[in-house]
Amino acid sequence: MFLITEYIPIFILLMIASGIACIILGASYLLSAQKPDTEKVSVYECGFDPYDDARNSFDVRFYLVAILFIIFDLEVMFLFPWAVSLAQNNEIGFWTMIDFLLELTVGFVYVWKIGALEWK
Image (cartoon, rainbow, N blue to C red; front, side, top):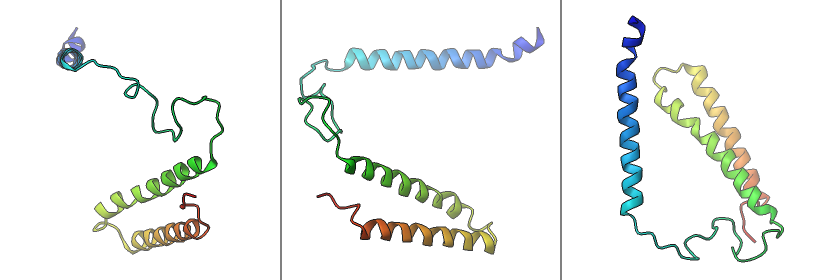
C-alpha cells in the first residue's frame, strides 16, 4: 500500500498533462479554419507534379542529395558536444576532433569536385 501512494503524484501529473494535451488538440481543431483545397491537401516535397502517375521513376539525384545531407549533418552534430566540453578535453581529444574535421573536409571537397552537389 505504501508503494502505491508514492506513485499518486506521478499519476496526477499524467492526468493533468493528458487533459491539457486534449484541450489543446481539441481547441486547435475547433478554432482552425477547415477549408481543404486541392493544392492544400496535395502531396508535396517529392520533386514531382502531384497530379502525375505515382509510378514514375525517380532521379537518383534525389537520393544522393538526401544521403549527403544526412551524412554531413550528422557529422557536424558531433561538433556541439565537443565544443561544449572543450575546456575539459585533453590534448588527445582536441587532436582527435581536428583529425575528424580534416576527414570531413576531405570528404566534402571530394563530393564537391565530382559534382555530386550540382543539380543539372
